[in-house]
Image (cartoon, rainbow, N blue to C red):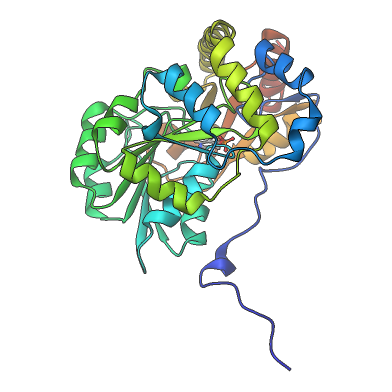
Amino acid sequence: MKSPPKPRAGYELLRTYSPGAEVECRIDLSDNTNRWGIPPAAAAALRNLDPAALTRYPSSYGDALKGAIATHLGIDVSNIVTGAGSDGVLEPAIRAFAQADGQMVLADPTFVMAAPFGRMNGLAPAGVPLLPSYDIDARAMVEAAGCVTYLCAPNNPTGTSITRDALDEVIAGAPGLVIIDEAYADFSASDAIELACTSDRVLVLRTLSKAFGLAGLRVGYGVGAPALVQAVEKARGPYTVNAVAERAAVAALRDDAAWVAARIGDAVAAREWLATELGALGLDPAPSEANFVFVPVADAAQVAARMADAGVRVRAFDRLPAFTPALERSRGSALRITVAPAAELEPAVAALRRALGGGDA
Ligand code: PMP
């Protein structure tokens, strides 16, 4: 009898994805989606969809979607690769540029799926702690010399961005592909699109899952030099953006700009309100440029569990490197809270206040 087949090396270290305690809560501020709803033109495109169109495959690489993205960003279609969410671009990008026994260099902490996507493709993740300013440690990231360097601006979970000097240092010095994940760029001044179109080593990732409110559709894209984007498309394969998602995404990009801009304004205002409230609770939130706020809190998992009992779900992190005084005090434990309309955010802050033991003042 033959023994069962073995997954490739490193798979024993991978876990299937679980975004923290999977509790059902009345108010869910755990996943950084758009709590203000779905853009109207995208919703209308979904309502008006003729199912007969679905007997055919979509275009191989999302041609209509590429066209809408090109117009939205003012760039050429040859600079664009689409995917099933930005995850659906990130993973094939790593696959296309992974070298045997290579390393994937990334900040610690950063987007939780980045390191597993590296491991899936045979790369050992090399985490470089953020600096006390929350900026990346560009010199250490360059010295780590990965065949893939993953940057996230604004960063998940901290919400903080990367200074232009640090970005330039990594792009000039890192030996391989530099990925700049801009899933949250819509809420910030971060914008590396022009950089990606003029460099031959930078892939910028964007998504319709956050500001555009379409996480369930799974639509994302990458922007880079044509040769780089073509390599990612080879790894990605055909048909990964389904026809329903493509129609709604094209409608959103074409006709929902005003709605999206207004919701970004709402999210930024809610973020500033939340940061002030957290400060008033004696906490020290990171300076967020995203649609969520990261705040060091001792015993964050317990605090999150108490909030969940009160019907509010947030994301807890522990065992983080203590790169700021607030994280030293919390022993590397923190909460990440997605912003939302006041009807959700105000009860969430009240639940946090009670969970921290501060009463219901
Ligand atoms: N990058 C970052 C930084 C994220 O936070 C997320 C979602 N949490 C993603 C990528 C993936 O988003 P999607 O695949 O929905 O585009």
